[in-house]
Image 1 (cartoon, one colour):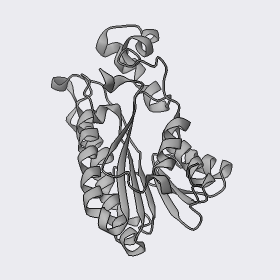
Image 2 (image 1 turned 90 degrees about the vertical axis):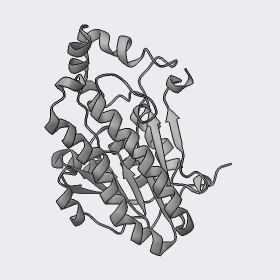
Image 3 (image 1 turned 60 degrees about the vertical axis):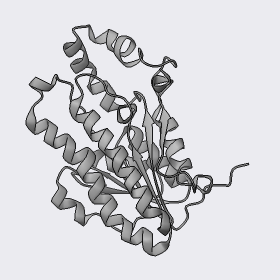
Length: 252
């Protein structure tokens, strides 16, 4: 039997926390006893989450504003880098400002947060960094150059943190789901339809579920369960690795 995950007295910071995977991670970590700092630019979404879930504190922040990240709490024991956006476009048409925004939010911001959180983790001799990557951190898809680039970069960052943090009791991993039933996925259906030249009602079946053997979207709670497990005692040696939850996508 696996040991119970008890994070009483620990502080967790979760980005992209107002909905989807981030909100589910906040709920799961709070249930384990952690005080959860929920970070997102959607202040209303955070307020609703904090009102619904005991142990969650709303911390509104635009993570693409790198200068503002220093104002976030540094004394966190568990860091879950989850925030992300998507843009679907051929490379030659990809807006440069959109590419830069995705890099800031999904690669630079995680580095900044890791960098300012590690001293506290090192001083405690314990810390957990869980990076919510994607199957696109392991595989590429056409028309998603910025997202795929950012997620592949996150894989490298996570491995480096694992190597540097090991001597200090800090682990670092990535979680790699296929398409998850979140607002991020729902919002890209129109872009996918336009780019691939198919009706919107065919996007999930023809684009999102074609690469997977398990023909359904992943649920946010499934990802949150894995994230929380990776912060627990049974995952103390699980570091520097990527944990696919991709319905068989990478089995091809």
